[in-house]
Length: 72
Image (cartoon, rainbow, N blue to C red; front, top):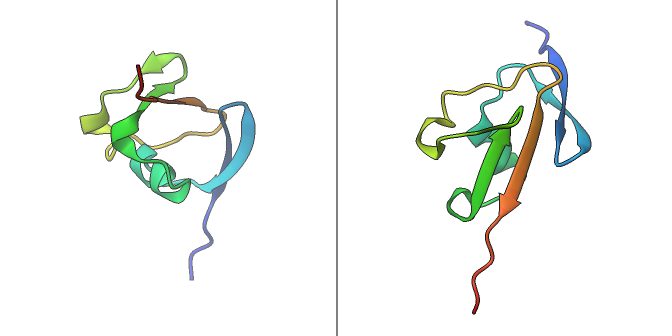
C-alpha cells in the first residue's frame, strides 16, 4: 500500500496539512466552504473558479479565501 505524502500549506494564515494530490476544489469541500460565495487567491493570484478542480496545492502554498456577504 502506497504511503500518502503530506504537504503543508497556509489557508487564511493558518497552517494546514493535506495529502499532496489535493485540488483547490477538494480543499474547499473539506473546509465546507461554498464555492459560489468566495474569491480564492493562490500565492497572490486570483483563481478562475472554473479551473479549481484542476489546480493542485503544492508545498508552502499560501491560499486566501474571501467570503462574499450580501446586504444593503
